[in-house]
Length: 471
Image 1 (tube, rainbow, N blue to C red):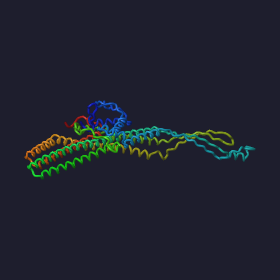
Image 2 (image 1 turned 45 degrees about the vertical axis):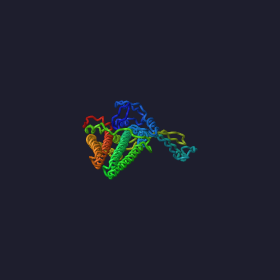
Image 3 (image 1 turned 90 degrees about the horizontal axis):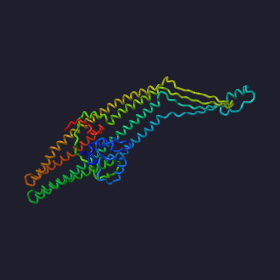
């Protein structure tokens, strides 16, 4: 059973990363039933509200065992970094709303010759009367509305919608990255548990060696110096055991910090480092790397830049301002209706500079998209070569080195008891066995991390890639 992706559902194990990207398929609200996705993988499970499940998990203190699914649920529920991206998405929803709003109408009131409201007396044709009539108070009230021409509002809304979609891809990318980080730290915890078991087993074997040497010293068959050497070896295994404990404690704390917990609230991580999936064909992986959220984001960024270019192009067309109102004459007591239409003449500024800038940014986005694909393929090639090397190393250690080292240690220990081998040969065989067992655990953990990394790059389970290159 493979550690990072296998969980029990009615005694059936999920294959690697299926469970991880099962969570990537969940909605942003994290309440989609898991059965929808489990059916797609042929796994029996139960519909679960992830938020309530995370709360239930956190309530069980301490938890006997923690699966990768538990760790992912807690992290998606509580990680502040992911929460910040979700709030950015909601903020851009407001920007989209604002982009579609119409301009507010404007009201203006203008009073000229204020205070000259005395009535005309005497001859209305006299010079004095005419002067008063000319300088009488006039009050002008206008209501104006800016009319955007050329599809400006529709272009703004489209650009805002694409920006909102871009933020959604950023959020999904951060979720995938966060889940991959959880898987890697979870792998470290499992590897730490295996190293601790190995250190404990090595200490037990070293104690057996000390007991054998002590009996031979007491029987007078070997000098006491051999017992001293054996106890030195035992002390070294005690140091290795304490170091393994510290490393495991550190990994457990790093895992708990991913969901903002000050201390681990679980007794052990449940999983195994044993692998069952060989590296698939590299060409098939290269095709799938285009499904990575970063690659999708680069494509969406081109679309966003084109939408912004459209916004700038619509600004070449001037807007029309229409206003209407009335003028009141205080002395004559009459009102006059007025209408005003104003449009700028695009003689000098036709938004040429902004349009040129937007064109160049579209071209830049296209170059960035090509660079992103190249970067992802480069990372994939490096991870694939390292994974293939780790796969070969695991095979050699499992099939050749470890059986030989175990056999050599058993033979030398038995031979030492019979007096056919010296202490140095037995201690050397014990050291070689321990070192190769440790190398095997490290190789398994390294392979698992590389699998996590490749699944992050292709945004899919490794089993979904056909045409395996190894058997």
